[in-house]
Image (tube, rainbow, N blue to C red):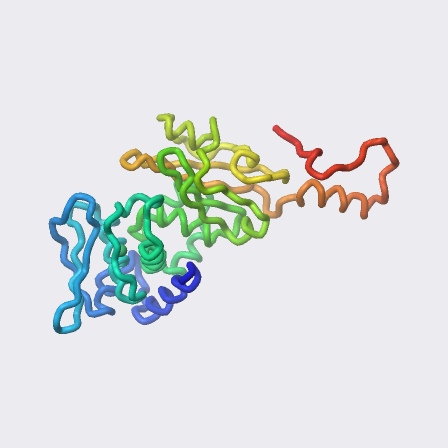
Length: 287
Ligand SMILES: [Zn+2]
């Protein structure tokens, strides 16, 4: 099941509960599958478990030691196991994206849809400023984690925008807006945080102090476009996770260098021969 299929199933499920007010009620979601939520003492790293009772209903247990946002996510994650009919594999720690089995990732995607429903979230993303201050406000409003909120913020943004999650200084996951995907901006998973980048500095202990200008060459593979890139960062010290938001200031990026050279030729006619052959890639400007 791919990401889109999971998201569509989640939206069908949400339509049955039709949440209108924020934050959404996770008890209502649990109720939709005949589930009752209990907050109990579980093992330290255990998020939740659920069991079907003889009467067909579900008992969902969440870890009372976890903060309420994590508990809300866990309830939605358990609902996902039932709706998607995916057997739980909770042997690896849930906070580590690097070690997450595919079935668990599918349930996480479903859970994020439930907590931040597209219908309610998208209009707020469209109205929000760029940066973690706005994401943090949305996270409060939806009572969801900064990570889930940031990831979906980038996915739904109309801007050229990406959200990057790194663990231990290595990029583990990224989500991009449609326009940034169309611009073919790739972020390689498994690569180190760009050296001396704002994100790397904040991970090393520098305080984050609002958005900074960034070098697109450092973040995107084989990038040969102009455009002003901005970077904002939050560091989650507990798990050495770095959350990065990247966005271009421009509404439309200038085309890649090679295409622009061709466009200039078409527009202004062939240049006079100057002895230099135009060679795509060689004209790449570095700052
Ligand atoms: Zn699970």
